[in-house]
Each structure stands twice: as C-alpha cells, then as structure tokens.
Amino acid sequence: MADPELVDVVVVGLGVGGEEVAERLAEAGLSVVGIERDLVGGECPYWGCVPTKMMIRAANALAEAHRVNELAGSAQVQPDWAPVAKRIREEATDTWDDKVAVDRFTDKGGRFVRGSGRLDGPDRVRVGDQVFQARYGIVLGTGTRPSIPPIDGLADTPYWTNHQAIEVEELPESLLILGGGAIGLELGQVFARFGVRVTVVEALDRVLAIEEPEASEIAAAALRADGVTISTSVKVERVSHDGQHFTVHAAGGVQLTAEQLLVVTGRRAHLDELGLETVDIDATQRYLPVDERMHVTEGIWAVGDLTGEGAFTHIAMYQAAIVVADVLDQMRRTKGGPDPSGTASVVGGAAGVASAVGGAMSAGGATAAPGSVPRADYRALPRVTFTDPEVGAVGLTEKQARERAINVQVGYTDLTSSTRGWIHKAGNTGFIKLVADADQGVLIGATSVGPAGGEVLSGLVVAVHAAVPLSQLRHMIYAYPTFHRAIEDALRNLK
Ligand SMILES: Cc1cc2nc3c(=O)[nH]c(=O)nc-3n(C[C@H](O)[C@H](O)[C@H](O)COP(=O)(O)OP(=O)(O)OC[C@H]3O[C@@H](n4cnc5c(N)ncnc54)[C@H](O)[C@@H]3O)c2cc1C
Image 1 (tube, protein in one colour):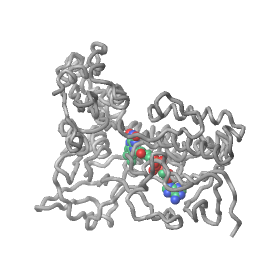
Image 2 (cartoon, helix red, strand yellow):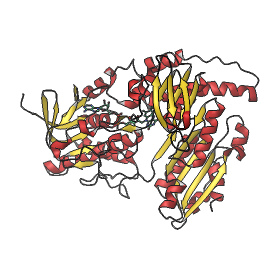
Image 3 (cartoon, protein in one colour):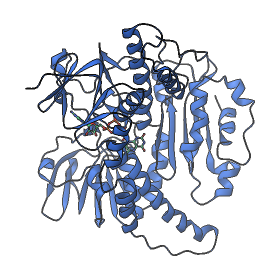
Image 4 (cartoon, protein in one colour):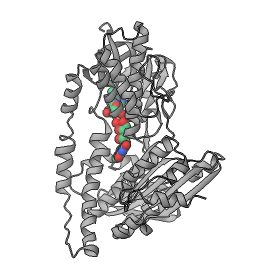
C-alpha cells in the first residue's frame, strides 16, 4: 500500500455540489483531488433537472400547439419522441459521457480520480489502493440514489428508476408511476403528452403532498386533463411482472397493469458506504447532518442532497458556495494573516461566491474579512415543480405556519380572474397564495401556480428572504398585465 499523498482538499462525489466546490477551490490555487465513481456532474445534468426539463419543454410545445384550436385557428400535432431522445442523448448528456466536465475540472488545476472514495480516518480518503491525506479538509458530496420501497416482489421486476425513464428511446404504450411527488408528476405529464397511457399511484391522499392542498388539486386536475389517471391513498402490497406487463396489487383487491413501471418514491443517501465509522459518525442516519457552515465534524464538510436540507440543485450550489468560503477562510486562519497564500484573488473569489449566496451573509455584506463566512439560511427555500401549470413555492405552507403557532394570515387569488390570466385563456389555470406572519407584518411563505409559476415565484422569494414589510409590498408597482401582478390581489386578500 502506497503512503498517503498529501493534498489540500479531497472532494468525494462530484455531483452538482461536489463539482462546484472542487472546481472553485482548484481555481483558487489549492491542490484538489476530486473523486467520482460515475459521471462528473451527478444526477442533475444526466438523469435529473436538465434532461427532464428538455422533455418538459417538448411536451409543453405539444400542449401549446393543441391550444391553437382554442385561440388561433387549427393545428394538427403528431408527437414524436425521437427528437426528444436525440436531444437528451446528444445535447444534454453527450451520450452519458462526462469528458467535458472532467476536462473543465482538470483544466482548472484539479486532479481527477475515477472511483469510490471512503473516509479512512479524520483527514484521509481511500480510493482503491490510493490514500489521500487532506491538509485543509474533506468535502463529501455523494448525493442520493432512488429509494425503492420494500414492496413484495418489486425487487425481482425490471422496473424503471429516473435513469431508465430519461434514457428511454422508445416509449411504452402504458406506464404506471409509483410516487406522486414532483418527479412523478413531471414525468407523468410528459409521457402522457407523448401518447403514453399513464397512471400515477400515490400512497398519500393527494399528489404533491408537501405543497399547499390547492397546488395538489390543480396539478392533479392538469394531469387528468392530459389523460393521466391519478390514484391516491393506494396501499401497494405486491408488484409482479409476467414478462410483458407489470401489475401493481393494492389493498382492497385493486390491480393496476401497464407495460412499464417507474418507481419515483423518494431518494436515499447511502451513508454506510462512506467510512463514517472511521471518524465516529453514525452511518445509520437518513442524512448527514451539517451545521450552518456545512461542517459535519472538524475538517469534514458535506454539500447537496446528502445533507437532507432539500434535494435541489440550487441548494447544492448554495451550500457549495458556503463550503468554498469556509475552506478558504480556514486555510487563511491555518496559515495565519489575512492572505498568506498570496491568493488575493482567492479572497475576492470567496467573497464573490459569498455574495452570490445572497442574504446569507451578515447584514452590510462585510464578508470578505477572514472569519466572516456566510451561514446557511433555508427560510426562503424556493422549489418548483415543472408541470404545466408550474407549481412554485417558497418558505412555509399555511399548515406548516399554523403548526408553528404563528399568527397566520392567508391571501389567495385565482389567476384565471386576473387580467393576464383572462387574456391568456387556454392553459391559464393557477393561483397565488400568500402566507403572512401577521405579528411581524411579513410574508413567510408563498405559492405561485400558473403558466409561469416558477418565474413569478422570484419576487415572492425576495419578499420572504428579505422579510420585506407587507406595507411595502402593498405599495410597490406591479407591471400590467403580468401574471405576477396577481400578487397584488393576493396581498389585498390577506386575512
Ligand atoms: C428526475 C429528477 C429531476 C430533478 N429535477 C430538478 C430540478 O428541476 N431542479 C432542481 O433544483 N433539482 C432537481 N433534481 C434534484 C437534483 O438533481 C439534485 O438535487 C442534485 O443533483 C443534487 O446534487 P448533489 O451534488 O447533492 O448529488 P448528486 O447529483 O446525486 O451527485 C452525487 C455524486 O456523487 C457520486 N458518488 C456517490 N458516492 C460516491 C463515492 N463513495 N465516491 C465517489 N463518488 C461518489 C455519485 O456517483 C454522483 O455523481 C432532480 C432530480 C431528479 C432525480
């Protein structure tokens, strides 16, 4: 066994979060080893955000074309999956090849190692026969994998996860989707719009259960309008496959059959693979807890889905910026003096990252000084389900706010009755729902559903994040006739 090799930082798992940390630290002049066992970039570019949004773009184009009949004459639409599959293969994923991403990292000075990394004591990482010793720290960004429920028979069937659903070249005639969360609904609507007979099976009593009930209703109605069957409160007891078809056997003798089965019932971190026992950390936890600077323990940071703070690319990037700033800060303090590394641009770079993080910095933005690293703040965590209509949400739902015994006010307005909604006509369903803390006079949550629900959300995220007083929100000017102008109506309806 070779002696450990001393480097500045080791990053294990180069998904969205790990890649960002590794690249920025390498760019800053540190010697960084980045370890990835599959594809650099992780789930988002190859089997997540990017290809699904390409699918959605295509499916929405079909839906818009159908709306011509209501608005502008007549259009005949012939869906064809081939260009979508081609675009995902060629434009999004380079046929699931990460050469561009690996080169981007190594061009910045990083050293790339393909393999599975695991901790081997407080400052060491082992990859096969190689051991790296980290001078300043280790960053874990190993993400999650699909969580497959322990349903009788399921493991013996050739079910799909998001990977097969995104790699598919020829669509099945029918598809059962286990899981009515964001991913299940997005993919269900896409495939239905391309002619697949889709059934979404959800164990809870509504789809999109983490969002406002009004959002669940509107999303379910939209999918039904696309021909999707939505079955809620289904307790699946067994799954079988006869070589051609899947059958889901549910309580009460219910049986659902389709050519393909997609399982999207959540994601799970695999802490048991990370050697956490070598640093006295419980590997049986669901996620790896971190503090507000992403510290797991002395000298070890974690970023992204692994931390359980919300499985979104924007969370991974947000956390990565904090890790970069904190590692650089630690390096400065270890070496002594304000910038002993001679990497003045690093200080600027770290501050730049910190400012990209936004208001997580201390008030006044005085974060460039050593020791002043932004801290994670998830109060205004935005999330978007890219169904048509889009469901955007930030902060607390009404129920969550009431459970916290906050003096809640709620304001709601229907998008169809707004000027822009009325003009838009076909495909105009949506609403704005605001959740306010009446005592503080600020918004603490909001939901924006509509044709541009995710974009309309941005103003609401600023309002929640910066705790903009309701009085100010009521007395600002909203452009006419935009969808976001409905926010003004919802504010007026707060009670
Ligand atoms: C279908 C789908 C759609 C999505 N859509 C969106 C969206 O629209 N917007 C959004 O914000 N988010 C979306 N997400 C979520 C987003 O993809 C994740 O939040 C994001 O990828 C998390 O990044 P990460 O760096 O934490 O982990 P990952 O992207 O999971 O990357 C972790 C990496 O670590 C590697 N790894 C694991 N263990 C080891 C090890 N021991 N050694 C070396 N390497 C290891 C893995 O191979 C992987 O490449 C979607 C997810 C899915 C599945």
